[in-house]
Every structure is written in C-alpha cells, then in structure tokens.
Length: 304
Image 1 (cartoon, rainbow, N blue to C red):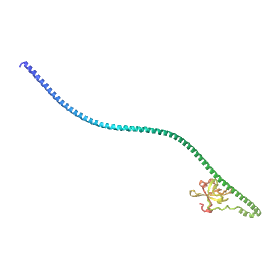
Image 2: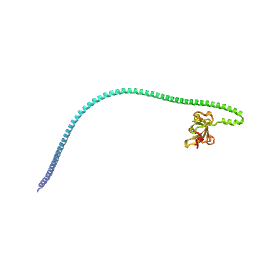
Image 3: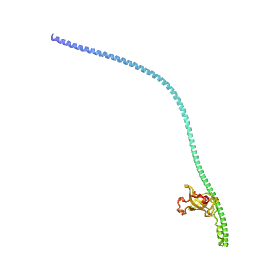
C-alpha cells in the first residue's frame, strides 16, 4: 500500500472514530432529552393536578366565604338596625340624663340649704343643751344648797332648843345648887356629904342595843352619830370598836360637856385602850371615820 493509501486509511479511520463519537453523543443527547422530556411531562402533569386540587380547594373556600359574607351581611344589616335603635335610645337617655342632671343641680342647691339649716339647728340645739345642762347643774347645786340649808336650819333649831333646854336646866341646877349651899351652910359639916351626893348624879342609863359610828376625828375629840335623841347624856361612856380585820377594841369615849351634846350627834373625848398618850399609839390603835361606838361591856359583855 502506498503512503497515500495509508494516509487515506488513517483519515478514514479518524473519520470513523469521529462519526462514532458524534453518533454516541447524539444517542446520549437524545436519551437525556427523552428522559428530561418524560420528567418534565410528569412534573407538568403533577403541577396540573396540584393546580386543579388547589383550584378546587380555593373554589370551596370561595363558596364558604360567600356564604359567610351573606351571613355577615345579614348580621350587619341587623346590627345596623340595632345600632339605630340604640342610637335612638342613647339620644332619649341623654335627654333624660340632662333632665336628671338639672334636677340634681337643683336638688344639690336645696340640699346645701337644708344642710346649712341643719347645721344652724344643730348649733342652736347644742347651745340649748349646754344651757340646759348648766341650768340643771345650777338647779342641782341650788337644791343641794337648799337641802343643806334646811339641814343646817333644823340643826340650828335643834341646837337652839337644846341650848335653851340646857340653859333652863343649868338655871334650875344653879338655883338648886344655891339652895343646897344655903342648906349646907345652915346644917354645917354633918350634912355636907348628903348634899354632895345629891349634887353628883350619875349619867342617865343607855340602851344595850345602841349603835353609832365615828363621823369625824380631831385628835382626842371624836364626833359620833348618836346624841341626845338616843339617850346619850353628859357622862355617858361608850366603847369604840373597829369591825375591819376581824374586829378590834380601841378604847372608850365620854361626853364631858352638855355643850358638846346634840340631838343626832355628840362630841366626845377618846381614851385609848392602852394607857399611853395618843402620839404613842399606832395607826391601827387610833380611831377613824366609820368605827363603831357601842355601850360598854357592862351592858353587852362582848368586849374582846
């Protein structure tokens, strides 16, 4: 074979290889395009199916929304009607409220006037109450003073009667003493003792159930709540007891002067149970207001 034939064979061989390459590329390309076309067709069909499904779904939603729109439109019409009715009611209520506000303002003015009148009346009532209280206090004080004055008047009258009685009795005693002195002078020393015995009379007897209390204490002088009306006389001796703390005998008291004797009271001299001065007695041994006075043990027999 010549060189030309070899070159031609080589060229043919290269051409065959090129044809095989291009044929293979064409087959591969066609196969790939076919696959891609099938995939695109399948994707298109799926997209169309999805579109139909989505369309149907949106169509159902649209129908539902139309139904809701119809219902909402009906409700809206009803609400508009109710709104108009409510607006009319609000307007009527506003008118009533305006009337009520006007009445309230007028009533507030009347209330202010009534409160002012009430405050004035309360102030006047407090003034009248205070005046009545002052008058009642003054009346009570006057009643108390009147009663005290009556008591003092009765006491003064009793004291005057007692003083007159004592004065008459003393006048009689003086006259009697003068007569006895004359008799004594005439009879001499032999009849003196008989005359003295007739002059020194013992105190009048007292009842065993006599009870009284210490009203005031001034040193050895005590004021007791029994007097001439209870049979107490000059020379009468009474025991003094304290009933507190189980009872205690304190001493005796004695009426030493007719001037200290009154119908309901008597001023007596205290003698303690211990034979010591008063300033040496303890507080428990001194008499005080409220202690009892009784007849001596000779009549009751119960001195501790």
